[in-house]
Length: 207
Length: 107
Image (cartoon, rainbow over all chains, first blue to last red; front, side, top):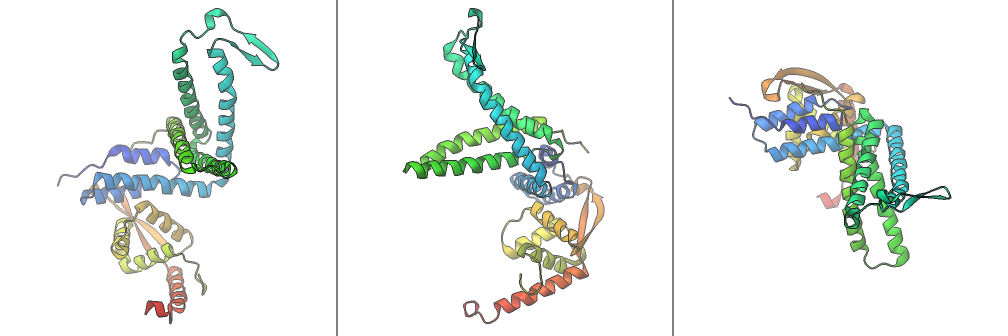
């Protein structure tokens, strides 16, 4: 009898993203069901469920670590925000403020292509978000990307609350539009941070 | 839950399935039994999360079986309900029977 091979990357992904638990028995069950004719989509959804359930269990048993990860993420993001404006000044060629003193830059430093400045700043922002995720996981490496997922959830919740407060205070009738546009940006931020976290996680050992 | 049982719905469901399956209770058979009974899809990971919790609380025990090629060379983990688990299930049943009794809406 020829055995159907389930997607190998899925099991490795689970072990890499949630390394605190032993997944061999679960993967054996999924493999068994896959042999019995379950679809690849079913297999991948089960792996996704395992990542979510495993992450939740990890957070419940390591609450202090999770809180520390959230604080790490907040500090990293504050650093990113505070560095963004001076970096923009430097790239526009004007110079930068250091304390109360302005440092002008020489003419050969000036960014020559104004039209591409926006792209460069976007790239810096993207790299910054990836770095935030990378830093959180790097400092909590034993937990895979669980701690980055925690940070994403906390930030998403805080922003949602903030938006609701703003909408209530301003009497905005376009709350749904506001939430839609905010969600777009938020999802992109989450994906970038999770990508950064994935890069910082340890590869799963092959068996 | 009233009547001295500390079991949630999921815990109770899994323990009942362990009693029904006897020696054949492992992840796949447990999930299938739940799916057939509840007619809802079940995530194997959540079954294992509940089983691990039940083992920690002493309501179930586990034992590794032999690895097979069908499972990619991985062993099965069989689960059995303990005496303490059976007592909890009985207590839960008493609570539920009291709550359900004489409810006209249920006929």
